Amino acid sequence: MIPTTIKQKYLNRLDELIERANKISVEIKTVNNTNPFTGNSSQEQVTNINWQQFVEWRTNCTTVLDNIVPNNSIHRSELENFNQLPKTKSHFEYGISFLKSIREDFEKEFFDSLYHKIETEICADYMEQAQTLINVGKTGKFEHVPAAVLAGAVLEKSLKSLCKSQFPPEPIINNHGRPLMLNALIESLKKRNVFNEIVAKQLRAWTDIRNKAAHGEFEDFNKFDVENMIRGIESFLLLHS
Image (tube, rainbow, N blue to C red):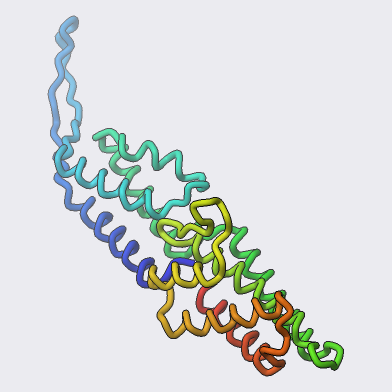
């Protein structure tokens, strides 16, 4: 999911470009043509579009579209041709219509992948399972541990998805090809202003519980900690998915 401020920035830019298209100088002239063989004359309307204004507009449009149209979108092929759009009336009108269509799809979030939407639903299901493990799990000293492991796995998955959804994507592997640890993902996303230090600190605390659960350090956290962890991660997912 694109942060609201970034999304609005691109929507505003698209609006500017659509408005600018209406201000590009377009002159329609009637030209008399004479057939050299028959001597017959005919009239033809010729559209003259200001070349400098058109090229500047076309270039700006290409820059914005390249940023918002996903690489796997069916519109990418059209985008590749946009920067070579000919200076004719029909192509100019097509370019404006294409820009308006992309803006509408972008605003209504139709560029969000179906995979991401399904992934979000799955994460929500897993968090519900984690809560169920807490509520109906076998009563015992460490009955909350499986819920902590499951909630931690959902947190890791959601942070990786957030990294991939950035513009440009934030790496989730290091220079040696190994997956980045949770704390490294948190730091990367904080630097990208996805969330602030207060949120990052809480994410690190949940990461600590997850790591302790995964490494058998069960004495270092309790059921209350895990319940708060589950509620907190659910709230985080609502804001960032």
